[in-house]
Image 1 (cartoon, rainbow, N blue to C red):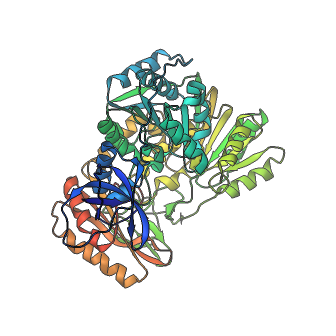
Image 2: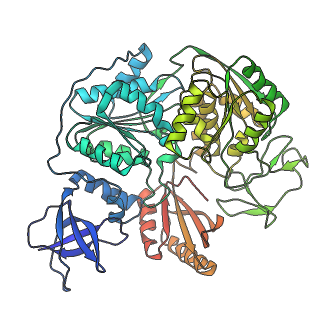
Image 3: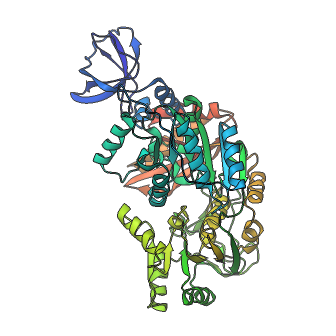
Length: 610
């Protein structure tokens, strides 16, 4: 008998192999290709071809169920990759897996508002829990998971990245004990095997982890929670370039499970497309005082005075700076305005080598202006300040205080992360200076002051999501202070009017942003990025020209712009990008699949434009 087999972790189309016995769809088998042993998945029986086929060597005990094959097929079509690449995301099922029904009771009591939120998500198959920082979203999640377990089903709890796991792990363990398994890239191979075995014999009811946890073999799935659903780290930056937050909605539908997305600053797409419950206020009484300083990227005297004021009364401080952006931009030091592309309403990037400003959407470029187009000041600069500089300066100013750095350079292991957070929560650290990691949902109990430096760096990026990312980050960082009691927020920006207008009302911002994006950008239109890279610049340019020719056959697909990528060369390969948009998703994907023979990288719903 002949079978179509999709090779795992392979870009190839399914191949035909023979086997004497009857095989089922989803069986995992061992085969050979070019004299090397490979694992593959049986897709179906097929007719005997004219050529001679290799034999299937053996059949494994693991298999993929029908739901998994169906979801993998969607991933391969939507994210434009081979079925083998899509299936390789999943951990296969074991034969004769057990499902053990348990009954448990958590000690969490919901407030009236939280109870309303809980009842709302129970009524909807998919919903958005739009809850302010500190409003008690986690308690609502835990109650929903408790209900799921007691109804004889299991739950998956997704977090953006490892940075969130220590505290969340504790809260879930406190609620569900040993019925929780934690899964992320830093878990050892041995521990992963233990988790899979526990899942197989029915000892686990909750899988909590980063985006890869979605692909574990969880039978009887009843609920998927996506915490901090706005976070970019749910998007994979390598093939398949899937977004776990978006895939969760498909998993929910195919596996008949409820889906809850939660955030204090939800993504615009979720806000527009899902039934939502607005959970306002904080679980513990707290108040905020906001201070704005008309400056950017500097450790100013007024800021130092404010930090000193808090340190004198043993109140903890967090200082936020954006991570290094890929692009330098130019901004006016007087009015804070950036130079906008006349065609795209996004900031233009500074290319010092070519003495030009360039739009990374439509490729429009112009000479670097000598004066600000808005106020005509000649004080135009591009500068940044880093976490190391700020930490060193604060250590010099406050030698008796413990000042720690909290960014990706510093936090390289799970142990370091746990230690830094534990020391801070135990008040062994006075000031934490960090990047986006500071905003990632950690609960800091004693923070009296959040300082935000360089938020304009995010706001001025040449990216249509710049406003959303800046506002979200600002609110996430600001929300870390005053979780219990009075909190102060010190914001250094030259765009006070923008931040002040929406600081207390992210919902108003999202409605404003919907108006800003209408007819041009997601969630109203789909974007697709084509990336070409080649060791020879001329060859990369030639491939991009061939892609451009293909676009002529797709009138419903609009080319926004194309040319050399923002980062023109990586790993000795020259890079070219094309950005396309359309209201017709099918046509956009049809175009994408028609480019595959050129061996280009396809990124649907891209979040990065570098």
